[in-house]
Amino acid sequence: MDFRKQKLSIAKAKEMDMVQYLSLLGYEPSKIRNNDYWYVSPLRQEKTPSFKVNRKLNRWYDHGLGKGGNIIDFGIEHYGCSVGEFLNKLNGGFSFQKPLKNIPKIENEPEHQLKILKDVALSSYALIRYLKQRKIPVEIAVKYCKEVHYELNAKSYYGIGFKNDSGGFEIRNPYFKASSSPKDITTVKNGSKEVAVFEGFIDFLSLRALHKNLPENSQDIVVLNSVSFFERARPFMEKHQAIRLYLDRDPTGQNLTQRALSMSTKYIDKSSLYQNHKDLNDWLMHIGKQQKKRLGNKL
Image (cartoon, rainbow, N blue to C red; front, side):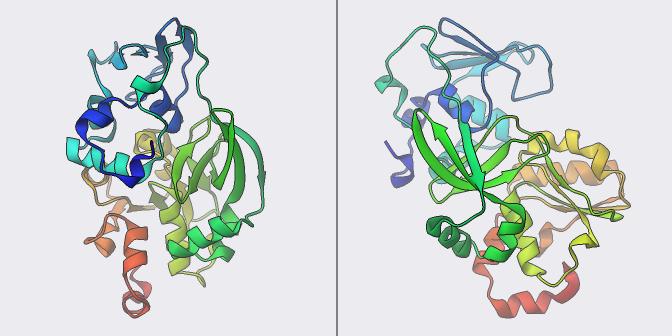
């Protein structure tokens, strides 16, 4: 069932397979024992896997936090959002497989791991059209992205791939949003005293689109690829004299921005530029060329 084509109810969301959902987020089990899938916790930093998903029950439990529940409970904890906001993420952000009740229960079933087959220069008409819909010029995207061909559940797909510092990819196409392992931040080092920080690579490309003529070495870049990697990015960010935050305007992004501002005067909140939109790309898609020109050098 393709949940993008209909609004997802709480009951339907609870039927989603937790193991598949975690795989779409880039998390793969460290070990599998019968129906128990053990992970390094996606909710906190740890070295020994203590986050368990019982696939038969479709429930999770984080032994380090002492918390657990269904996929909605996980989403609220992971994104720091409400039930409604998480359902919106499910409706708009991912393409899912069949609900759990339609998946046979197989002991020691291998994990559904996304496997990168190859990465090549961007050339797919569908992907280029998707970039144009997001107002991202192709000549900018090809500098930072690849066309990634990957395999998931024995089927082949392709998407726009943005590489992280550990060699994994963030993958986007018109219907799918996922990550390949290993997950990590992406840094672009230009030797600048300033760094711009984004949650995802589409927002980074959006800023480049807004400043096509700006020298690429005018600032360094950090793409978190997940807000959970903020702490991982801090050592690199805080080497700079100015840290410009272009984080999302949702509660998670705004809470993280406020936390950063409270830690150091180096952090500068730039999200007021798109205050009536969910993120920088959403603003770019809805604001006309005249309004872009009005902003001038404010970015």
